[in-house]
Length: 280
Image (cartoon, helix red, strand yellow):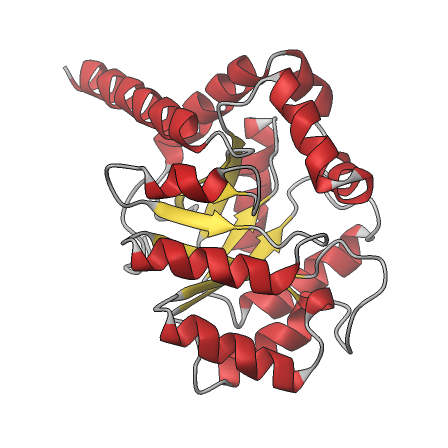
């Protein structure tokens, strides 16, 4: 396992609105919190929130949407702001806006610039799609992942509700020579009402864009907590496996941060209990 990540590491994703920042500041212990980049609120809002979380002791991660970067000068400003705030981890994505605000229409050019930047974060992350992307062909998607993985320190997957497919996909990646550590995306402690509320707050376009990427959406909407439980219990035993390179879990909290952290602790405890029983 990559030495940059603790075994069974967990990351908790929040959206930059709806009281998520206040909830994070009320946590008793520091955790890794990733702040998404909303088309409605922009990158500056994301960096501002991440800076507040970092000042409070959390390991804050900025989601940097390439299509919202205005140009090299803007990227320089963002890199300086994040460096001054002590933000050591940046997750570079393409972003969901239809028309780029600047010259970048994908994550790769921004990733390349950050990788060579004097303010390069200690960790650069990228996205990965175990079940494909609705707008990108599989060969194009695999080529893009291979190119980005050369520069990235880790990758985060979209939620894949079929753990067997996820594990097979990871094995295939490793066979093809892509060795970047992976965080498996899993749903947090969210219910159907909360999913609908978040959809309204994010906006129809981004909401549909995110949900369309989730092949197991019907399962998530019908029984969110059971879906999270089944997926986590299937993946957790493989965390830290050197052949798979699974660094940990990326929890999509949908702004139910405290509830998701409690869920993560209870699920992890159950896995430890199972492992202890098997060892007896």
